Image (tube, rainbow, N blue to C red; front, side, top):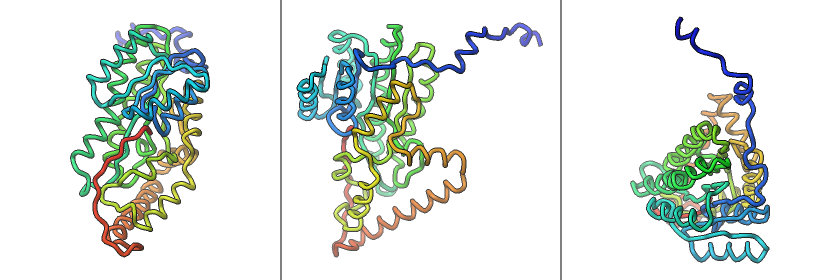
Length: 325
């Protein structure tokens, strides 16, 4: 009782702040923006869109040649690239050195976007340790390396800003064959949810991007562990994916809109927004749909291994493709 009587209700201003969410970055014009995975896919489209919106960009990607091409394209269109360097975000020592270089050459970031990532699918009996480790190293630890190397400066600087982390539909839904991928994407979702509240007092917003199908070059090149992509039935499924996938440019537009409106959950397509709402509101129907999806994937696996449609026996490929999401 003594404890309760000693507690004081927060002031009216504090109560208001509990319900009013500020917008730290209402415009990208003149803002210093770091983007990882900037050489291809969503990362490339976001880099180009950010520069077109007036941002002064700092870019990185593991692919040095394509990264240079993106830098040249931005400069050709009158954009500003403050700094760029190729490197591996899963390497903490490299990220820390890169951050020191950026601090010295450019200063503190206003927006930090974690877009670099890889995709790996497969059933648990086909996935190897290297697949699990690489997914977590790049998709989860990579963003963590960037966060710990760039966000503390934003806090100390006191100007606010925005942190953007790219998760996936596989970070909010139990998609078949996505165990290793979901381990990393559910992880960055958890990090983002905590930082959303931790960083609010510093006027730093957090956006969690959950793309569904996005038509990037990865769709044609990524190998799925235990599945023969050359099989005609698999090719038919990939063609169906293209019919519902959005362009990287549309995904980039959603990300920039999420930043300037300080949206936490950022969807690149309606189907993922609806799916997440459905999963939370209708647990049993969601489980049924996931079972149906899983059965469909199992069917594809079996016909692939039998070589149905091609007349050849399929082998197991354990390649993991690097991408920017």
